[in-house]
Image 1 (tube, helix red, strand yellow):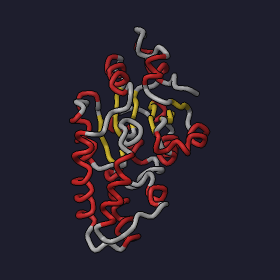
Image 2 (cartoon, rainbow, N blue to C red):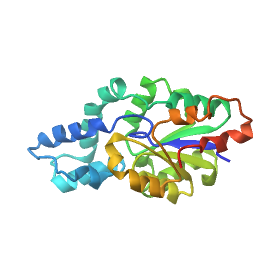
Image 3 (cartoon, one colour):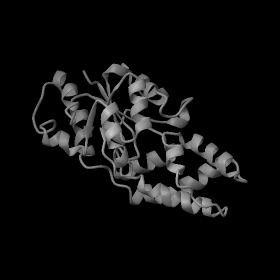
Length: 234
């Protein structure tokens, strides 16, 4: 039985991964540093705070961690509020969950400032029982800490949670937490699709597949609702 769904934010619930390369180029450019080709691979899954610490150490930045995070929030805030869309079918899925008493949470590696900005922009506040960032737990993804913390906050056992994730460290985090994971297609991580399919329980190109497969189009008994949510492409 699925009693809760937990969304990763960037690349899973919202289409936002495209903005970060430009931000990294602009930010490092202020210090006369070119963007390394492998940077995104190195920081995948890290929390906002872990990423700031990585930048400071790797690039020997002459600023403190709080200044780095503040600058990133300022550079990304307007885009998250005005240009980042939710993925197709997310709102309908959230409505389905709310109707059937399935709790919903967000477990993101991003900053609280930005996740709350995008949630407000799309008027999604009423759908989520818990929003948590990896900065609030000891370890970022692929460690299971954030997913276990969200499940605890939702008062749902890990085995009764379904996670939506777009990158391998996130999928690994959900699996390590003892949860079922539906891998989500995202253009940014499409080169990882074969591995994502291998390690996740399910795979979906977009959330409307859940609607098209009858998940949201038919009335169902509450006890069936959770199981139906796992109807992503195997």
